[in-house]
Amino acid sequence: MTLTQVQTQEITLTEAAAQAVQDMLAKRELTDYALRVFIQGGGCSGYQYGMALEGQPRDNDLRFDQHGIQVVVDDMSINYLRGAKIDFVDDVMGSGFKIDNPNAVSSCGCGHSFNTAESAAAEGEGGACNCGSH
Image (cartoon, rainbow, N blue to C red; front, side, top):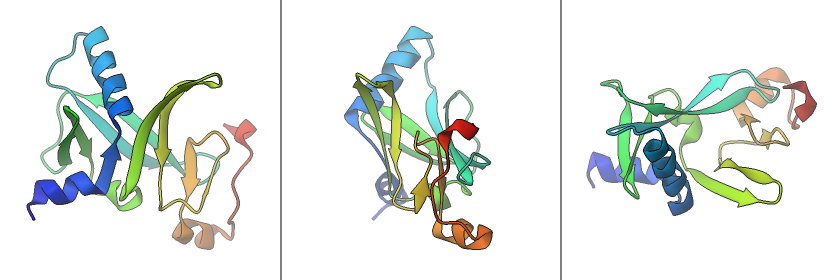
């Protein structure tokens, strides 16, 4: 198995999410851009998800293509995102990206932040937060 095949299995981008990214790139007239997916400390549940359009991926980024979209992830974030599925939902409650992360033991009600087993144990918490604290 090649490195690219392994990386593609690490994060799944659904066709709906890929189409949403393609639409954003076309609307902004951006070519040769990737979708950067990352986590950062903070948020009411410990970590926050982040996504950005990336014009200059770093040399040490993990890179893979799904449904015509290049996805880049830094080597620290992949440890918290391994196995995650990124989808785009559009329903009566609104539209946006949704991340289903098997590493999250609890998450904020709005889905923007999460906690892992290790971080929950370190903080002595295990439950999700109150979304009103963003």
